[in-house]
Length: 584
Image (tube, rainbow, N blue to C red; front, side, top):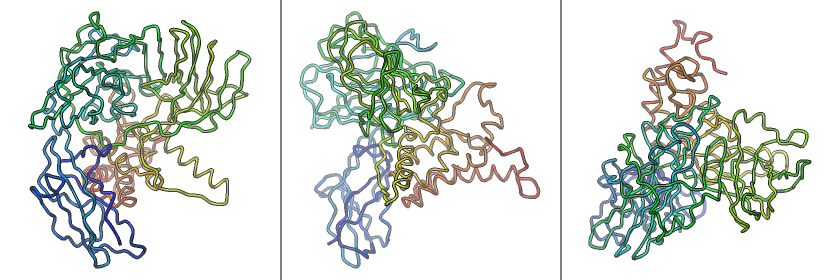
């Protein structure tokens, strides 16, 4: 007997909230053997899980499609929850109703944010690398409510905890987007972290892609010079009231052990400057300063739809080689985008330096291809206790890591990270070389799917080059579920598209000042053959892989504008003149 399962509602970075007010609905037909044919389906939406209140039905819709059925109800409002179930007619017989799925709306409009962005006053990070700001807010709760939601974003990257516990295992939040036009936020269920009585929210902010180094030109402050935090905790009571606790002028700010954090260069952490206990309630923050309340974010705040970045695999070294300098080179046997996590025991003042590279040359790390990227993490120990260390707010492309220290290293692990796209395609043959080729392809995708589809994970670039994305999108979509990842990136591609329809060569674009890297010149803004074509090829790849009609609808205007741009460049013979359109 067939059943309907794996209901997917809209686009979202997770299963907690949907990102659209009228989300499309997809499902799978499970069981029942082969030669199955869906003749029709019916969707019901209700305001309660028992489907006894405000039930709306699609009616019986004749269709063989199990993807992206239209939302049958009125549009969701911010914070609203509705319940969804589906049944289908398979080979003439109707299934039972599916298990109930939940469609919860986040905050759909900027005006729903009553909190304010906050920053470190007189922040030296506006002029260069500087210590990361740390923020905290203590508060009392008489009740933890029946439902709690924490909405978080930043101009930069954030790390957030409640009562000293991480709210998630996600890294490099929020996703890199065209920040001047839209900034993503995350939604978390933090019910299990709150207690009656005293609580504390703590945040750390870093430059990230927002104001950190970008490109081989080492631009800073590309999207703004203020790294700011913003969060809003909402506690829903059984009587329908909502208690809100958000960033405002009552928060306290200081700095801690993170002395600098950069996507390209790595982190510098001095544990002698750590303020122990600051993420717990009861900490004495009387010497901390007042925050700077920043202007309201003008970019569109939107619920993140691309899968968040996570550690997806942890790898032990396959060999260790001691150098003549006394350092040790660790070979993890796999090129990846990731972080090196260590356990170390030393004494106060001991320094640990971890340097990364993809290849060796004559037994040493070969780092010339990194260009200006330092790809180096530096730590200073505060005492003789063994501690585990992993860097925040950076990542490296590497197979090899060289550790230089006089302290005792007791554990070394490489944590591979990427946007957590699910593996859906598997390939294996009797030929080891062919299997290795497939494995290399999969690992290359992982290493280059870190928030956006990039050209490389290691040097001073790591940009969302459109040519790379369009060439690889069909393959990527068969190995991993890239629908939400690539459709989100396409939104930024359209936002960055030029008034004449030209597509920038990478997205998110790097909007530097006139006279800079690509100040409206044909070299970067004009749209290049094979690069700008991502506007049409990537949506089509998603349709072919997933039946994704919604992306075709969403990107239609962008596609038309790109094709019109091409037509405008044609000579009378219908060809684009030589020299007008090459790149690379």
